[in-house]
Amino acid sequence: MDLESADIFHPPIKRSITIAGHQTSITLEPLFWKLLKQASETRALPLNALVAQIDMQRLESDEPPGLATAIRLWLTYDLLGKSGKSD
Image (spheres, one colour):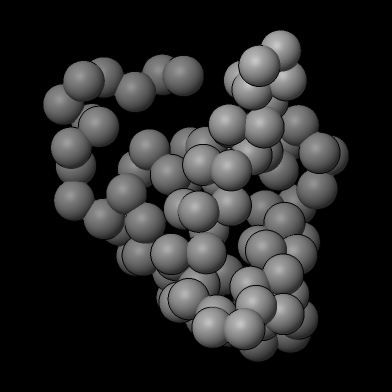
């Protein structure tokens, strides 16, 4: 990942994204934007398609978190799943 250590603590950045034909704004730290981009590239999906999938999954939850929180949780779970295969 091409983040410098100073970028890890950079404040959140707001970006607009289209999900299911609707424009929405998502505020994430640069680290999470980079991880989200990597996850979409790994899956050969456009970024908005991956976010739409995460959004659908969060809405199926009994107590859905906000979208930005859902993305952070999904990315963390995804990373733990990849690194935890041998555990």
